[in-house]
Image (cartoon, rainbow, N blue to C red; front, side):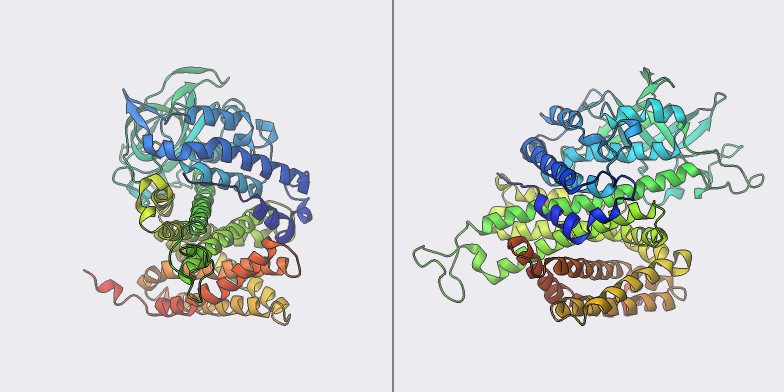
Length: 600
């Protein structure tokens, strides 16, 4: 049976010793965030997920969800665990106090969410999606929605979803066919089909608030093949009055659930919208000219904001799965006996040494651990920058640029790393890892979806090179290189930090050369951007984790204890064994797209 222990000590280290959250009491939600309160949240959240969520992970995977008579039933125990989660207040941890939440900042909710994803990703997805939906409603919803709907989502009485994908249309929203027709009372009627809707139906809550994107047809009924007609709508499963009373069933039905490789406890639904009553979110777009392009919808801005929150959340999913997989791989390697250490028997009185003595096994486990803890630090640093960007601090604009730039990196590199960590942990088990009863193969299956949904990782890479680098005339990469150069200059003359600073510098030089190459050649040949995108994102991830490990090593120098010793060990491993990938990635980027595009 797999084990899990919430990495509370590691979060304490990040929050108190590396990021020094006590310096940010002026930020929204940070005023009451004392070390004692942080410790209380982390400790209790860790215990809850270890005792309530984790025991249901394997059974939920074995049983899966059931689709019967048009409704979905979740695995045994999920309903009670979800209710316990909401009753304990975890569902509203990041929601504003005015909506019944605790008002904690993103960096705190990120930690609690990771515990959920490690202990039971399928179950933890329900509150994550609901939080994304009520956050979008707080930005784009009408006043009555904020008063009558959001508090019931915060309490967990109702849940939320995000409905984007259609059978013929995923990333390319221009191809959508779902349409919304305005009615005389200001509501809309939506018709169409959405697929891959996580939590699209379930037996955990009394109502589900679907946030749906659909196109508003032209006056002649035609649907334009562009984004100008796309809008964002609220479509409840059960109709809701402006006073919050539930009414009749809306025109939303479940067409079925998918039979999946992993996250089997999370129902992935086909939803059919048949004249479903809907409310448009955000101000109504105004046509610029008859038959011309509409102005952009503020509701769509809310949708993209929800997607960005979800992408960061999925990055944390990757980290969470990597963490629990590493814990189990490490535990197995410390128990399994196989062969003798290359330098001679470590335990001569035993028939064989433990697996952990072998360099290849240590290498796999260290690589997995460094991926997980490094990406955790990057996600926490990005969440802190999000809070800074929403403040009046002088560095708010720079923090916003960095958080925006890092969003696709946290999502893609975090989930790539999580899947790799799960694979490495499974490898430590040898043939036993391939057997279901040991449980580690579930981590591999569950983690694979994280690289695909909320924008496949290749799409994240294209977002990075095609949008984020050039936005605001390249302000984000300028800010990033200024940050890297400053950190290197502050630390490379310090003898105790020289090794770590040289690793960050080596990676930074490769990333700077790659960025310049893309800037010079991207406009001439867009295929070069596309061919380089995934390698560029990985290079960015490696460099950013080098910076994170550099910061963690600086926070650990001169301190006693295993945690600090291990941080210095992992930082050295990253600089010696992973940063050397940087020049290789640069070479691949600069190879261009010619040979790639030869495939007919």
